Length: 211
Image (cartoon, rainbow, N blue to C red):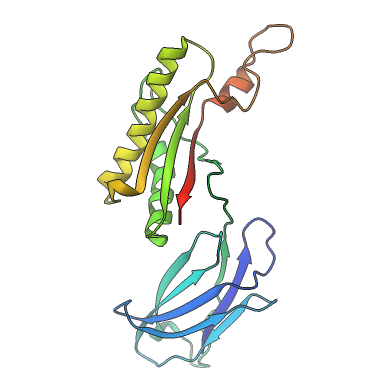
């Protein structure tokens, strides 16, 4: 037997109604499908010495999949039950990519930013039909025109990185918003600079356009 539990990443509670698909090693032949109940559990009967893939899907959640070899099963024919959480999303609702950094006043991605973009790359692999917009924002320092140009270049740098890793160009749109959509005040009520607010406004986001 092989099985596990599916949770909601935000609530950490069992996720009912998730579709679990068991595929063979070719990843083309569906062997069985199940839907999780209130406990979020699933269980499959499998054969020894074979490779399998498990695909976990639910509407308005990012899908996940993993491969395993039945040789990993113990002698009591029970798999170490993996707990997998799915993250919810809403169409056209931005999701901030934390810790995306660029060189000062440039669009050059720093090395630590690529690690974060790699997680988005794997998300796109797990959701092959998904199309996204990747947007960059600035604070209010500098002119509107300069910030718009800079944000466009930064968004394009992220998209180019993902395309360079093999994601199809048609699946990602880049968009620079400049300083037009702040999420925090750039200045305090007394007119003084607000570094914390400006830091929040300097952000990179993505949103799902189609799934």
